Length: 376
Image (cartoon, rainbow, N blue to C red; front, side, top):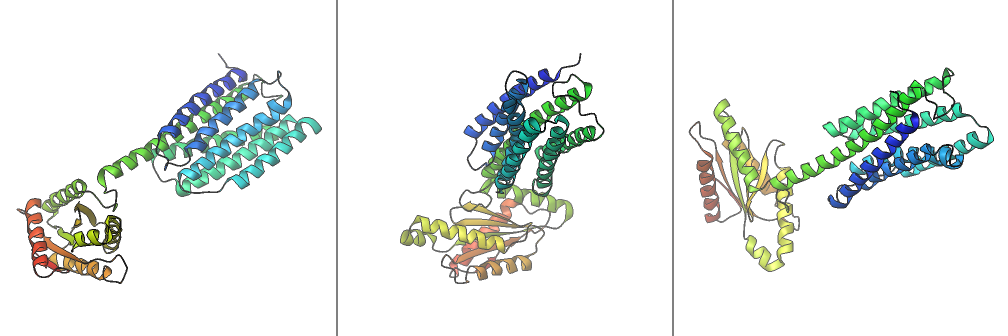
């Protein structure tokens, strides 16, 4: 049985209403640093308004069922695009697409009341939506990453662009039809594609936001909230994994234990906020001295652990000297520190043994007067 366009419009309205509720609840309960959810929640509301107005064709004036209905549909797609921009940390969009919406409104008023032409309305609106979806797709391809939620939205946008271009081509060959409620196979296919697009774009937004929350929770579970270094559990796990890898391939890591000298005096003299700033500065300087594959973790308090994969003792000592140099550059938050270094000693070496040696070397650096590196 073939669904008539009015039934499909009602289905699109129902989908929009459900998705709007879900996204509004997410916006209310998700962390405020996940931007764009308010725009994504507003998009299906506009699509719902559009569906209600389209479905009222013949019962309400054309200013609502033609002009406003099309503009609500266009604005919904624009708001969704702006939501994607906000979500990925980009601004802009309102000036351009707001102007396009105003121009589109004027064109629809002209083609509805002054020079009525259903075919021309369809052609112009299809091109506008194609450009909008194309801009959105281009933006996601450049900035959206490669995760499944992003790929889903990209595929939906690309497929609907093909539908819109097909609809535009139908006008060119004189098969635009007589109206949106025409019970033709082509009109039914177009409306069905619209329903699926509304649903899948909303699902894509939900998946993107959920994936961001999951990523942030994973980050919180593995990182120190102050210094943004790995926490003790995470860095210890990576050390163990690196030792397991070393036993397979025969190339082991070095480990450094770093402890800020006289840090208690810093807190007592300048306060804990200053002490926290010193820790953040220390972590930033240390990270800048490391390679991309090296890992820095907060071991506890003012003590940190550095994992240097596939690094021998001389190379590890060189890294330690770079860290000392970076923290003696004259910055107001520069600090002195003692470092204990140890390197993997073969197949029988264990993480506990390496940590014991690094800790003993650190103690030796403290005993010798601090602000230096010792090997163990």
